[in-house]
Length: 333
Image (cartoon, rainbow, N blue to C red; front, side, top):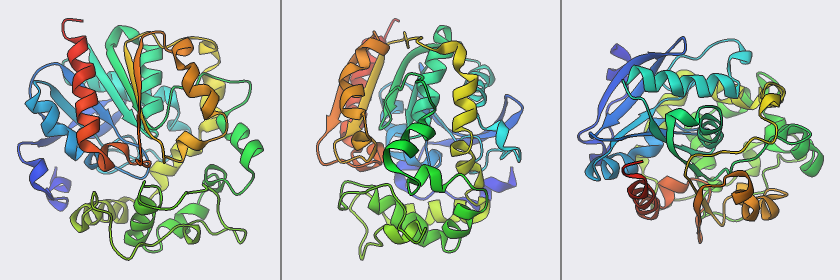
């Protein structure tokens, strides 16, 4: 519990939150919690933490919901298993179901951003009995294809694609951990809607961060205090836990063979920025319009003009409004 003292609250938006640890799926998980009512789980992506949902917690609590945002497996104050094979999508979905049990809840709405979005989609796919509704930010539900996503993107974009760069243990860590604050500043700015278009590829010399922009000033949605929080967390933990999510893409694809051609049945919402790199991935122009075929109860797709990758941080008001509208439609379900 002493770890909590090393990461103090950073903004007024966090007033009223509580922090604690729960046991789930064999790991110790740190959660932030606020409000009472139907449960809404908020799952972050890379390279983030529960803190990326700071603008949603109070809005959900004020709307009559119990908002819970964990540090995901490998991140922050949650356990970071050393075996890369402990980072598959089956593990992540197991963490979510175990979290529901630890919270004493039978069902929840599961909301995910970036890598948290596939966790949300797959939890809804695997356990629709425990999911009242599912929301994906940035990353749409992607049905299992004939090859893994890593193989498909390597073929389409090449060896310089960032997911390929992340594969070799120690290589990405050496670059990302050299100056953690500068890494986070470059990541958060360059993938945002405030920056020029992001290619997702490393430079020809193999460097990754040098292909990103170090801004002279932070965008309005990101404060120095926000950057302080992220930098302190990743300075303490390193990036290996988060990078291990990328290193199990092929293994997760193999393990998900039983769900080939399965559909996500709970009510769903998808939110994406039109300047998000994911929105511009090869094939997304075909996948996103076709989502109702794979998510028959998709209520709507929201495309936010000018928004980049950090959806709920860049456009908190629009995301909160969309979430509350979606949740309101589920009341009684």
